Image (tube, rainbow, N blue to C red; front, side, top):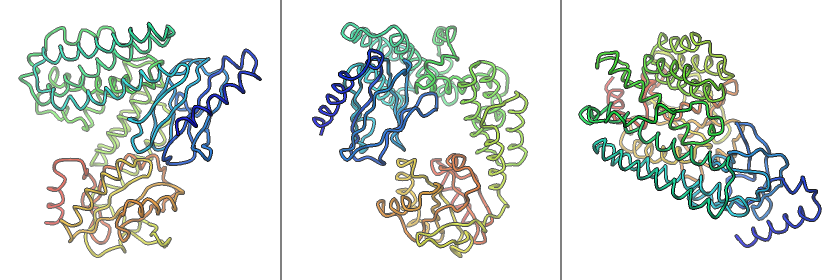
Length: 472
């Protein structure tokens, strides 16, 4: 199949080369092929704005030459998956991937493709490094420093060697070098957070020069704002500083150490507001932190406090109305409220109320087709829980909008329990807000009264919460 793709590229290049002006030839060609596509399109975007949607042909191929694309990182999406690439005028980049292993199968080829390939390698290596943290964060700080220094040096040397052959532009070299640095900073910050929160003896051994890089940090690098490693670094830096502040200013029993407490969320929001000047970066983190604060608030007072933090810093991000709507959603999910009249759609297209589904106590779980790895993982756990706790009714609620047939197909393909799967029938709610609740489960009595609205499927105490629910 890759040969068909090669012929496709050659044909496009011959056509544009023979008929285009000099300005056209300085454009940027993007083409490719997607095996086992989820849908018939490929979306190219930058700065969260769609540049174009390219549709797949009968061979699952796509391609187009763009004029006036600025050099930089671009995001391409084949929903629900996405990845980044680096483009400059004159590039002709082919993308080949198989959705069965999206990132691992992804291959870039053609003029200028080596830049995107380098960033992809960083991404895959960072995933391995993050997994490595589970094994290495218990080693002493000097050993960890040596390990991360080695990783950074190896990547810098690889970039230097590639540049001898590829003759990268100065703008890409700077971006790639900064990417390596911030990946390194991210590892150091994540290690610091883990040992200071869980291994105080190791934390005491952190040498004074361990964080020397903090003197040169740039929280306003707009060239890196779409690079995962840079965003991960900022997130971990804010988190680490919040823990360090607990040690420096408060006693060890303070709820400051709880990442989802209003006190911790408030500190990180204020820190982000003071450190980050560029709104496109600042608002991303303030919004993300506010969402966390709201989801984990278990009283009306705490919910109002999170919104109050945003008001105190004069937050005017475009997501503020959504956050206020989310606050209202969170209040409606607090224990004691009743959501039994919630309308759901059955696989037979009938409307039923939640409280009419079963006479048993219920546990609702929520999923979206835009998060396939999540619902596959979720379904495996729920299937086991159904066998283990037959006295409970586990109710699946799909939150996607305007996709009834796709929902039905997904239930069929993944062999979900057809008697327990429903679709939300609430068009007035912003579905993007509901995606923040995919890990949350709601425990209700048979009338739809909420008993516990805080349960998370991925927490160690989840089954203890089930047993407490059953014993009430």
